[in-house]
Image 1 (cartoon, rainbow, N blue to C red):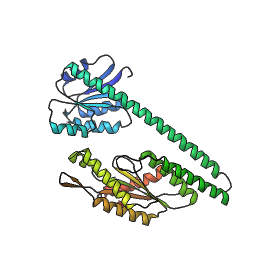
Image 2 (cartoon, rainbow, N blue to C red):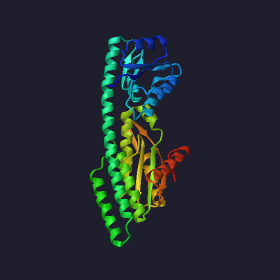
Image 3 (tube, rainbow, N blue to C red):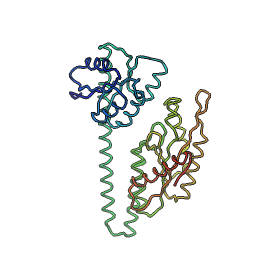
Image 4 (cartoon, helix red, strand yellow):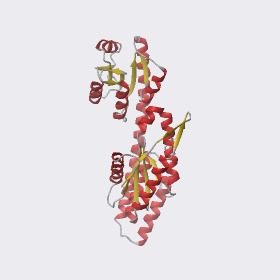
Length: 342
């Protein structure tokens, strides 16, 4: 652990916050906030490693602050310990749903605080190590992609003879085989994970550009998914994600690809499909998701999805193409959800 890591104490009581600061040793740079707004602004400025956050604040709930911090600092190691004078069994479920890492009941003795702080430091070190390993893997994948792009650029500089075109086709097929063999799948839905999906996007864009074939894609977002997690818990949310993954596989052709793009977002690649075919597939997917129920304790949980469809345009980067589909999906959201926009 590096010296002088920053710790943020958030509590509306100045006396209590000062008492917590007194429990720290000199290895931390302690900062204090007394409201939700002040905590969010200060976190953006100081980027703390550990946050002790009271659930009850004068301008909001610590639950909401915790969720917003986790989203804002998703790529930065951070441990959040929620605090409250009240403890109820159903409160722990909500604490976990916000993404909090631990809970401590107020008031607490210095020894208990030190133990919680030590546990947070241990989790923080593990989190930092995991992120370092993920960054190493990401850089390795990027270097391999850059090498592949350079090789393809060199090929494109040669005279476009029939033999050359056939050679490039064989090269793409070999690359496709290697990509399939090394694919990594999302453990929850069974679809391609984000890294594999990005690699497939780049490959299909190059294929469409070199072979002058049509290519379409769609961004799919589960409507009001947060309310499912808030109402039924994350385990039910996971069941919903699995059901959506099953629906996608049931609707797609063998040559299509689907991956989990983000939390409740999915992207589908449709090689060789024009917009009419893509729209028909999108409607089939939307209808199947809307007809899918997840049974929880005898009750049925139903969800819908908003879908944005976009064609690949020659000269666009993969990110540009995905951005167009994403914009269409947001138009579907704004138009009332549970619909397809092109």
